[in-house]
Amino acid sequence: MKYVLLAVGDEKVWEQAGPAEREAVFAGWERFDRLLKSRNADRGGEELAPSGSATVVRKDGDQVIITDGPYAEATEQIGGFVIVEARDLDEAIEFARACPSGTVEIRPVVEYQG
Amino acid sequence: MAGDGATGAERAYREHWARLLALLTAELRDLDLAEESLQDAFAAAVAAWPPEPANPPAWLLTAARRRAMDRLRHGAVVARKLPLLIVDEPEPPSAIPDERLRLIFVCCHPALSTDARVALTLRCVGGLTTREIARLFLVPEATMAARITRAKKKIAQAGIPYRVPSEAELAERRDGVLAVIYLIFTEGYAATGGDRLIREDLAAEAIALGRMLRELLPADAEVDGLLALMLLHHARREARLGPAGELVRLPDQDRSRWRGEEIAEAVALLRRRAPYGPPGPYLLQAAIAAEHATADRAEDTDWPAIARLYGALEQITGSAVVRLNRAVAVAEAEGPQAGLELLEGLDRALGRHHLLHATRAELLRRLGRDREALEAYGRALEAVGTDPERAFLLSRRADLSGSATGPETGPGGPHRAHP
View 1 (cartoon, rainbow over the protein chains, first blue to last red):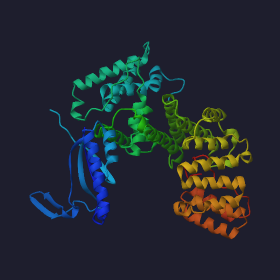
View 2: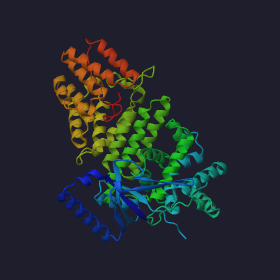
View 3: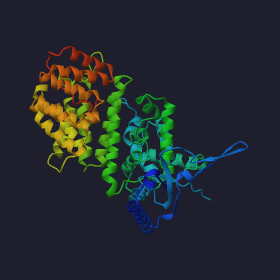
């Protein structure tokens, strides 16, 4: 099964992190990346620019309303995503545990057959 | 639950539901389809029996398989478009392989909400109908049906595997299963509405689940511990309530109304485990309950032993509630001053909990520090939630000259804050 791991966190922590802390986080992500590759589970992923850069396009009937984002005001925002191939939810949970993000939301990818 | 007058189909339901559902789920890779088909098979048995077939479970399995094939052929299932369960290859076939552990672990998976775990476990493993579960939890049947449907959908969509966890995960996941069963049990006692019989049913279901788990995981000491703990609390059910339905505190309970054979069963379970490695939290809680349950009179209670057990339990759980209970036991064993000292530092965790203040008040009063005791009763009264407990505290405060005892430490288990 394919899952998306959404890395969720407080962006302020990252903004205020010093160079050494950032180094450590990057190293953590590299380790995570190696783990996924060694298990042939890596199906891509990206780090997202901070939610302050988000733009929301909302359609209401014929109208299109463009506003400053993100779509939901919250302390924690999605900071990135990783797509993984896992045997089942338990393996996806194992990957999420290994992921450096403090909070990870696991969402199965809908796969249509035939 | 049917008694001695049960029909063959009812008996077969009770004995074989979980085993057959577990097996069908593995075969069909669809919990929903398996459940519906098996339900149909039992309905057919009610109509067709007697005469009872020579091998009732085999008859039911064949009927359920046929129903499942019918359903699949008629496309009733295809329309749902849910992915198939992820199923490991089954063990080499014996007559009817026992797949119940897989069923239990899937129902208690941590990715499901607690409500869903409880409902699914009672439905799939306990074999209760949705209506029965709804009645036990005092919610409309439609609400419970929706909860169970959502949970089954999540299992399929999220890819929760139909599998006994690997050795590495087993201990943690086993704890989750024990927690679900104990939650069902304590729900029976914590119920705020409904009549008493209903709550006893729920506790009895939890005990039945505990027995099944013990059959499936015979080497697991914590499974024994949980079963013993539930048996010990449940053995006191008839003495816990007074004539007006009020709670009777442990020291005041009529011990002749405790169920001796259930206590003996629990004590035997604990004895079997006594010489082995460091005990887990359920075994320790059961040992504490056993100390209370085996004292002939309240004044015969071995408080030093209970204080030691709470000490061990506090070490592994770090729980403030356990510390509070330990303080009560230490006060009984060594005197109120020693107990009072153990309450220090608990205000941050339990400051809004009336039992901390009520316990402090009782200990202060025993030390003759009446003014401070009055103050602590006041704080307890500010925090107390239920009327019977409020009435009790008011009477204690009004009568600062009587002899004092701490809050009951038994019936709900040390983690529960109810008397």
